[in-house]
Image (cartoon, rainbow, N blue to C red):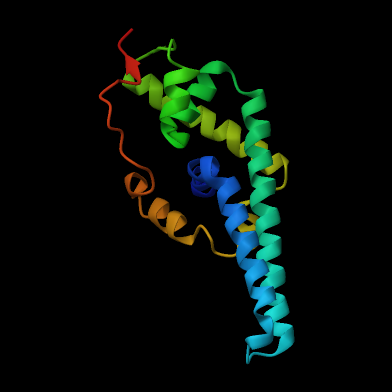
Length: 170
């Protein structure tokens, strides 16, 4: 069985990918502006800056892949992604206010697993393997990946405050 931890990391980060890319870009810009102060060789400083610029591009590309995933998802699949990974209350209360998922808990988890496999297929089709993800994001998601690898998925995402169930018997 394939490990989908990197896909989960991307999905959990999706609502913030734009902000992360912006922060990485600002960091590269600041490093470039302050590079004259560095005692390190110019080539090393330039390589660091280029790595950050490449990381920013990779994060924006990952954002585009998630957007393409969303474009081929059904409403139910978008709800499942929103509920489990994105956790944007305003979207759940707005776009999915009238939506109710009628299935058993067991069926819910099966749906989530199928959706994760679908997402993995799209990422792989676009050339995003775990190795590429780790390499091109320059370690930005290493703590998330470590937590997911250790089975600590609950530490990665915020807990839900509402008692609204995602699924109901039926």
